[in-house]
Image 1 (cartoon, helix red, strand yellow):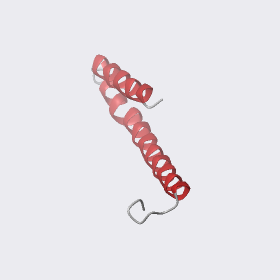
Image 2 (tube, rainbow, N blue to C red; image 1 turned 120 degrees about the vertical axis):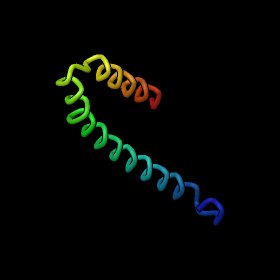
Image 3 (tube, rainbow, N blue to C red; image 1 turned 90 degrees about the horizontal axis):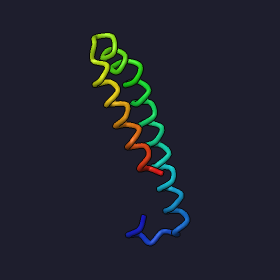
Image 4 (cartoon, one colour; image 1 turned 45 degrees about the vertical axis):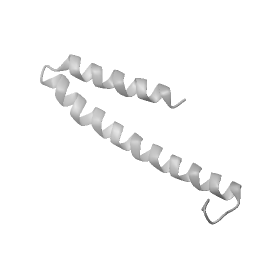
Length: 65
């Protein structure tokens, strides 16, 4: 769009739509990870690993703000 010199507001609108879509996909993947992998780790005595993964995700989310 930029190389075709489209209107700036149209480009920003498209960027916003892509961000929203990626955020939604990330939310679904996170929900799946927490409800499957993290639960599995806790149930199999790997609580510390589960906690570390949750903290890592939390820290990544803080950098988005």
